[in-house]
Image (cartoon, rainbow, N blue to C red):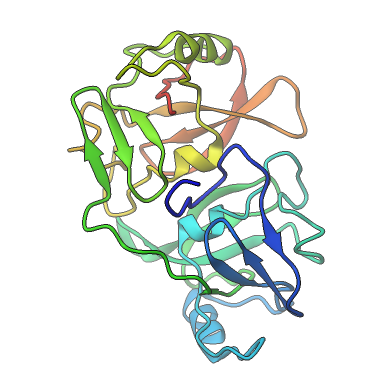
Length: 262
């Protein structure tokens, strides 16, 4: 198994529902509040609500980071875009994360579980809250990326990335063809990343492009295809904007950039 995958890898979620009131994600080692409170809260009060939470014998709850909350997305469905058996009663709503926006201290990241994408908004707005705690700590790596000439290995997720993406934007089908033909580092199984996978590359501290520029030089602050098709439309698929760090869906015939993953 990869070292502490963080989001949306191309295998089913693996949840442990054996403890009342919580969900343990066996992949990430995170324990989640199973049913969110019905009260909407501004960002600061959302953080405090999690800090004050006592659930399943634990008092070390917190507001999840952007990438932690993204890991719950299920883009195969909408309204809400989450496993409704594991997380019953989830509203198709905006949920706060603990991650501030890099370019505006008055904004923070949220994840919209109606369709399933992250974005930023004013911290004074009142959104839903789902708290998390670290149930199974993972060993931390002193560096995030292992950089080679043509590829980058993410030590946090175990994913291997094409360092320099395709030079020109392409359609959805052309992106899949490009990755399937790619040969780097003796590997042949390159593919277009899922929405969750591509969102792990977003660097919340950077701007336009929101990516580690040493590991991924020359990344355009533009849209990049994912392999995740939109659950409510067969002619649509998800992409990630590296100028804003958000995800959205576009028509398959549109041309976006692509960075392959292994």
